[in-house]
Amino acid sequence: MKKPFQLFICLLLVSGMLALSGCVDDTPATSDTPDTSNINQSELQNDILYQVSTIDALLEGLYDGQLSMGELKEQGDLGLGTFDALDGEMIVIDGEVYQMKTDGYAYSVDDSVTTPFAAVTYFETDEAIVLNGPSNSSEVALLVGESLPSKNLMYAIRIDGTFEHMKVRSVPAQEEPYPLLVDVIAVEQAVFELENVEGSIVGFWLPYYVEGINVPGYHFHFIDTDREKGGHVLDYTILNGTVYIDQTAGFELSLPESAEFMDVDLLRDKGDELHTVEKDDE
Image 1: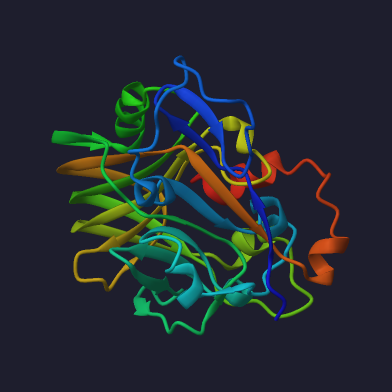
Image 2: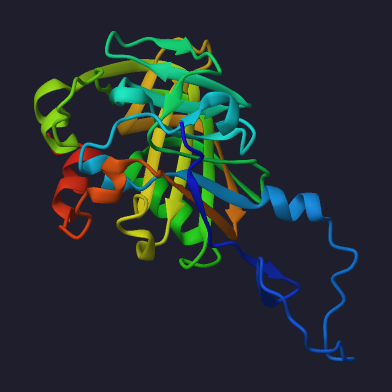
């Protein structure tokens, strides 16, 4: 397997100034230049959302795995995605990877298993919001959205709590020639409704300029406390819990070098398809 081409778009906000990662500035330092010599470089390295391939490529049916779980776990300890041949929903939590299959159960994943699309980060809480009393998914989304300091940055989100209702889905492995993702969802998705379950939602809120690369707005997967059930979140009601938010100012995109990716037409508008794939329209 060829090593994926890596596109770095690491925008790091440092001491109130915007620094482009990988760029060299030959301008001599002056008294007006902030001193960043004491910045913890490991913290900057952790403040990155790492992604494999693009959501538009997945929508077009590019389901062949590109990166192993062992390699993915080196890039973050929280995130989501899918698996080779679109075999279920992925949740990465506390550094472990789980596969939600269409039987409704979660399975531990070997490091050799590969993914065609995933996004992970090293989660470090910047803000926490305590939820007291029942709230539906729309109410939580509004509350979190109002707390974000800027709609131009990226945020990893984890919600731990007790859920009165949790509606999730998964999809089965596909065979070549692969169908479009919207067609898989329409015909083959398995939907599960969990009641009075404790667990964790993990995922991201991303700005709308990532359209075509990832999912703008919220994208969540769920797993219960026993690490037995979960899937792609369609809807939920939470009784109580805590929302943890990690502001993430860096982005690293690893693109496949496969012939399929090189040849696929990514110019087609897939906004309606993405909405169908991500949302619960029942």
